[in-house]
Length: 371
Image 1 (tube, rainbow, N blue to C red):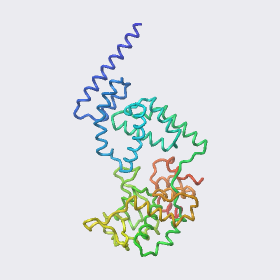
Image 2 (cartoon, helix red, strand yellow):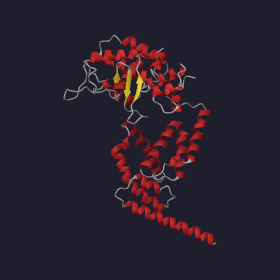
Image 3 (cartoon, one colour):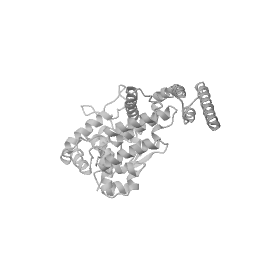
Image 4 (cartoon, rainbow, N blue to C red):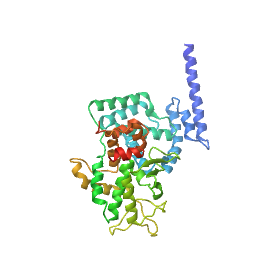
């Protein structure tokens, strides 16, 4: 009996201590998420959660101001995923931050029964990201959540449920387009040939392609400098090798578009108007870089040319060359280390997903990718 009294007394003391810490935290001028995170590692009472939630609103406002340092597309994905979760919580009268474990388990179970594992992983990423940025621990890092996700992933694998990828753009597609476009006098066609070549050669994401400036290409070594990518946000840039024929296509396009190698900070791939002239801004001084919308239309047009190679397939997307190039290297038996380097993947698991459908340095591109 005395033991119970002592135990209850300890619990009461811990609650009072946590109450005091949260109240003091609320009035700190330099409060940061990690301060709140240290306290919310404890098991909180409903009252303490309300105080912590009130404090976290400041961090959520900050997050919206700078978008968490994410690219526009990543931020849009985060907000979309987060809205799905908050709508679910609202419909069921649950708190979204911090979420109760049993409520989170139910949400994951519902989502996993209706969606593939990559969709659920996106949900998990958004929930963890928002909690962590708001000053709470990542709720989806719990072992039981991970076990639940793994269970559904294994069920998908057993039922042969494959993650749908973009239609792969292959070497035969590049050859077909190059034969048709390489002698063109149309700037847009030469640009499209250069884009598809460098994207396939370097396994580029659209975000990487859209940032390419003239100075990012070393025409002596055939290397593309990639200062920023989805997986690399350090101060050290990535490099990818460009095939020699693609380098020639880029030079032809630049010559036709009037882009000089000395224009180091100018966008390499630009928009072209209906009169076959580079599109410039209102001041008339700067050319306008291609956008996602422009590239989507370009890939739809290229697919029309290559549809014979892809019967009953969906149109190309901006991700098609990256998928197709990765699959070709897997098919050719390229060492995994070189696939990871040319594609700028951090793990073999991620790179291998691109190889579904088939089961870098200079020599990889010249001897494997373009042979």
